[in-house]
Image: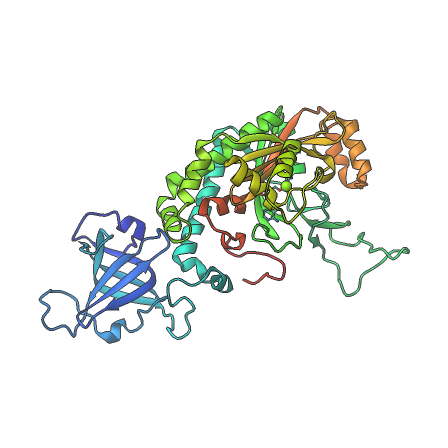
Length: 472
Ligand code: 4AD
Ligand code: MG
């Protein structure tokens, strides 16, 4: 018989219809007359109840199939089963239909003595140690479905606004952010490295004939796309070997990077705000059951916070004004504030959560703390950068207007000693048909963090990659 997904089964009202559902047993309870099996197949956070009459029952007058204890012995928490029976209206609280089973097949057993997800309410820390099984919990089912929906929201937004999805390489020879946090890619024998006369590693016989690494950002190539197609976005994995073991950093994370020709920094801010609000609205519209669950179980201010962000216009603030607010704040920060510092999460969150009580877009940062490609302001000190700062998260988006002037860009590249051999192709865009253009990067996991209300970025990606952790 064809399988009905539980999400669809729960919406049926064709009582008496015989249907088949398949999934993983969340629990089985009952008495000597009847067994109640809570079954989940991942299509929704809700379980369907399977009712199995037992052969030992005596006073029970109902007709139909009776299961022996022996038949149901293997139907334990975590087992995978197929259940067929008639759809009946449920008397139980909070459920509309259940299935009165006449056939149960066990696909895979789960030994109660060793199955790691026995009880409800395991800690998130414990669940990280069983990341191969945690998608089967309510919490991770909810998070992973929301994550999927956020990806769909992003593609929908850009597609509907005339952007082209542009695929940038994952293996590259250039360090876009210039932070030296790249994971090297090589086929060389690390036990027997060929060196040149100065003792430097000779990459001429490596796979690509030069040193290569996993990309930290698709932006540089994205700019090439924008300067041909007009409006593009990337959406792919990025890699950073930054040894920051924080609840906001992953070594492998997904980034969305729109890049738009003819956009200045103000257009860029308008886009960032409109785009991220669209994604949050999408989550509220498409993930209600899952968000309700997370709001109830983890953070009962979640829905309020999501609506709060939608209701207000984001503050737009100069970095220098932001520093002044922090300097005047009564609060004692762990990292001291002065003009020129790279803001820490505590500073960003102070501005957003305590001072303005809404998202802030901070612009015109000191050039020393930002990447080489950002448009230089006339003051000679700042660049046209923009970071979007969010409650709970801090920086969720980082972007800028790009330096479109060939000479200024080349000067900056030279000042920072970026090897020209890696950058010639990027510079050529400023030589042939250059144009003012802008873009930004949204950290996908930080968006999912915000929308789920989770506290740790390790809990919004199925298999997190962090320092000392590449399990699963
Ligand atoms: O601010 P970042 O480093 O900017 C760029 O990479 C630019 N090339 C983007 C652009 O203009 N096209 O990174 C962008 C965003 C951050 O705001 C943050 O949300 C996320 O990527 N991010 C990380 N997320 C998880 N783990 C990490 N280690 C992250 N590093 C950055
Ligand atoms: Mg940044």
